Image (cartoon, rainbow, N blue to C red):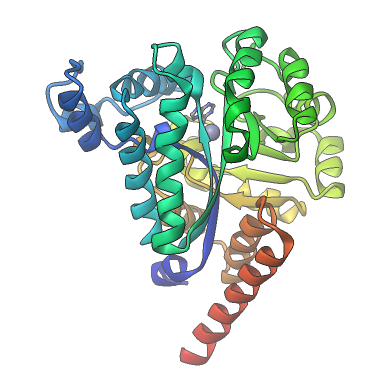
Length: 339
Ligand code: ADE
Ligand code: ZN
């Protein structure tokens, strides 16, 4: 299978932190515009700093980078840069995470953050027909009270937000700490997802399911350590938003050949491929698909099934999901007749 096939295949991205799409070039541009001093002398120096030992070593740099985002226009430019990149990769639907606390804790109003992102998403639909959803993530290294306050801030904008999620440092910050805020979000009609089983144990995935009531697990790669959990995830057809380049960059797996994504597929799990923080991990959707296809020798059929899972696991209405699945089938049929 060729890189061209992967590139042309219609795709949906379900696990993308918008702050993680901040490329060093834009970081420098925004630092200058906002008169912020960066601890790096050049773009090359920033890229050289992107060598990580684990999740925390990445998060330290990621939160520092987000410090250049101040004005509504900055959040628009950030989101628009991501949209234009993935539009060229045939990504047709995106579900985007944002971390409001990273910004509100620096004095940037919630309204500024969400309005900039939302405007870019509207333009993506108008200009490219790209659909989207927005998911607000609570930072799990902060308190549940802080998360509850953030949920309150979000309520005036509920029409722009589809769901809530849970991200940041995982080990030592279990989902059970956020049971109340997820119950509240659920009562307000939000969908629920959570990062679990990226670095944390299978127990965190159980908690995300049983205590938070999530309808997708972000990462979830450690589920294979617990056979009962795998059975549960398969039985419920629970989607897992796997991020292969992120996992190798953060040393969850030492190299792509060691990734357990194929074992997950073989176990019958609903696996999707996503980029997580593409500016930091060396690739957007196509690069993630290609790296894992090559590393694990995935067949064309497996790649197509994973792309379909992206739409099936999305929060699009069923008829739009069906229409995307049909366009994947049409694309594959066209490739067969033309080859
Ligand atoms: N925030 C941004 N990327 C993340 C990841 N991979 N895990 C947890 N929190 C994150
Ligand atoms: Zn993530």
